[in-house]
Length: 334
Image (cartoon, rainbow, N blue to C red; front, side, top):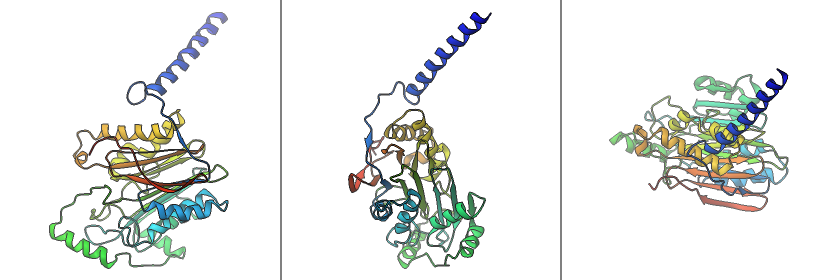
């Protein structure tokens, strides 16, 4: 009986290991070919779109002085939040169809501590409010009027975030009132950032004014932990940018981190997540204009970037790489 049980357990263990290897190698599209990893020396920071260059510069100021990844990702994205020329983040961001600038943001560290705000108005730096939610409350997410009152209680100032330029564009849009949330190289969306400090600790942030001319009250993926941002200190992290509804439907950032946990490189994980989004939206009404960009980073300093269509770029800076803007690889031709 003992020999029979021992034989059974041995066979089960072998079968289990073979299944795990098979599952890892065949997740997605058949047997995968291992891609060479892109790796940089820590500390490092990577962020979405061309406004990520200025964001990286501020984050690098923190990281290069042995600061924490968490401080870097907060202070880095505050730069585009305060820049009125960046029309999809913070001050100067495009309003909703009723003329209100509403903001979403989240932040997460290597301990899985996180904070988030959504549908926040009149506060210039939602990322800092999100960090306050993480550090000063027992909650993860606060929204709307409650988020505004919390921000005021924490010392943030009430400000008018609708600039004259954004208001003019909104008034011109109202003449046609056609809602087309196209996200591409001309219409940048969100600032998402991942940083790895010299101690090997990872953190991420994501902040946006959301899709231009959205319905009042709409919230995208940027404040959704597991959607637009996810960090696991044992594995790595990911951020997403683009049409938030598609990111939420597929839990994109979580998928990337879990793929890396199961042996995928950062680049492979980003590519696989993009392929899944394409597959899930093959016959969806959004597919005509759908654009998603993903950045991934593991705790070894390996990073990846991928998008559905051309136009997504990202900025990266590290101990052995100058702040540089790079066009991400894409899955579809246009």
